[in-house]
Image 1 (cartoon, rainbow, N blue to C red):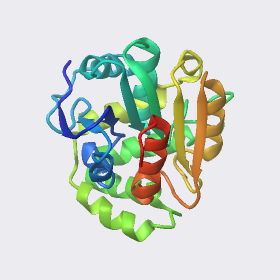
Image 2: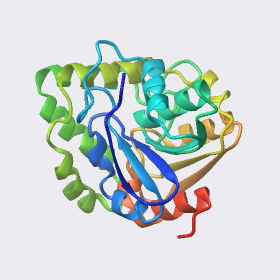
Image 3: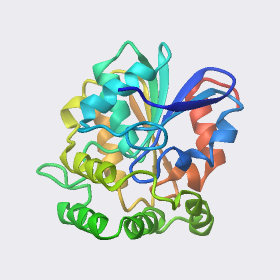
Image 4: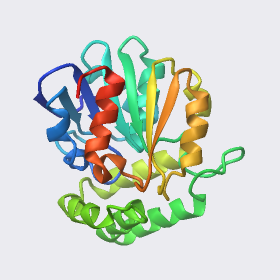
Length: 254
């Protein structure tokens, strides 16, 4: 499987991996800013953008596809589902990944035994039901949930309109939700040895901040930066702070 991507900017390589439901355009608030410091490689996961859909996606197959697209000793930046893919890639292909920034990351998207800091499974099931009935309505509903409580909610609502066109077919979106429901990365996280910065919004209703704090403790070299007042998309809520955090972590002058 080959992931489509576009590249922009100049400097050390940085690969951006989008989350569920919005695709690569979700990164637009920070792409022009990051391109001043990095050569960005913005990928489309299977079924999004120019990447063909796959008959069956697993976290392992997505991680392997991402690894195949990376330049040597890559720096990764993943958001939500993309953060999970990045963690799996780092654990499965440690020589290809030098360090990571993970936005709105968790070891488990849904509640399970020993991990209560997540969405109830029933809520994810409701997402899947709504997807079958009206995909556009689900994307708008998820966008509202994702931005709820953010101090920059109005600006985020305007930015979200850029991503309101459904980015993938129903089968791809459903497969992504099912993957989020199945993924439990608690054991895998302990195998991630690369320096990892977790960036998380204090107002995140999709992935509670306590989940990111627990994940940071599971990682061998994990640190966390909480963005006060940001929700599930801290890079879009506070682009300047996000870029400053990434460049500082990468050792690139900002």
